[in-house]
Length: 485
Image (cartoon, rainbow, N blue to C red; front, side, top):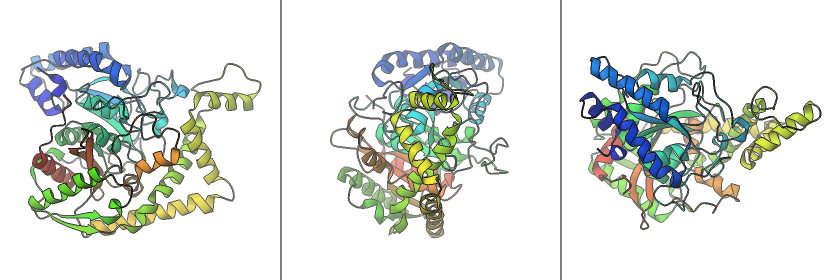
């Protein structure tokens, strides 16, 4: 029983059919973690004792013939910016190094209701700000395919854990590509759902109008199962869409793409795109044509400016959201200070990393008197135009196909001191968050040096079923073995 190579479907079916127990699965996963974690550094907190207790409860349910949840006995890792009752939640920041939430995020409640077994909290860029996982205050996660390279960010720990076989499924968060880019870098599948489909209650905020929680797994089906569990209206989140009917996403997996119209934006294939990535994506275009889809080149002209709007909006929201960490109410407090002003200044200086400080400063500047209209207000107008542009395209096309990242996974340290170059990693992903539409990243090949390449499939608002249909069809056609040897 090689649990580390199993999908969510294989694990949950095996437990239901009594081929093995949940306790055996969890023990095997922790054995794998003991082998891989010292090399990969994906986890910040492990919950072995509690996970085994949860597994035994599932096994008792199986033994007694009780109704089982959709993820019964399946181990899952959770990104460390999603609150877990009684389990340390740090956002990979010294500011929250000792923070233990007194409640579960809505998605965590949903996982527990469906009998999932939470095995630990995963490393990330501090407060989800980064594209390489090098901004964590505690450790830098490595890419399991090549330990000298980055796993992507900010959900790098979530993607690396799946790629290394330390978890069959994980949760990440995506503000500007933070699920899709690490999924592409680590050769796994990652879904960024429609904004409002999954509750943000209990997700520690970075950019509130952009953040969205989503699943990462080995296969498309894993993400479809995960989304069925975590999606839904939540009255505790006023950005959650009201009266949502949870669809059966796994039903859509075999629908295929015959008759679908798919657009490929020409702006996403310009200078700066690695040739191996371009070739792999264009190969997928031919595959979709073979599968019966109509694929055409389209234009998304203003999306080239989306990166500027994204960094102004996300930084402005970060400035506002992170103002609560003042050393007084909770979070890190400096040991030596005189007066409130010094307390706040020294606490924030000591606890925030360079990238977080950079974005707070940028956001505060953009929101300041005299600059609000010139930067933040204009960025919001561009956001609306980008949303309308995507809406217009989806009136004619079912889906959009694009690269995920312009480059292959890069060597650790290569871009850490060049923020502008690092920000360009998000050029194909940020517009999707600005528009609030869903997108999935899945493996579409490997470079000559053996590094994973990902492709991005985008759909209209609440068009996850279409995305899953196309992603499953492509996954079946390509038959890529993304299990690391």
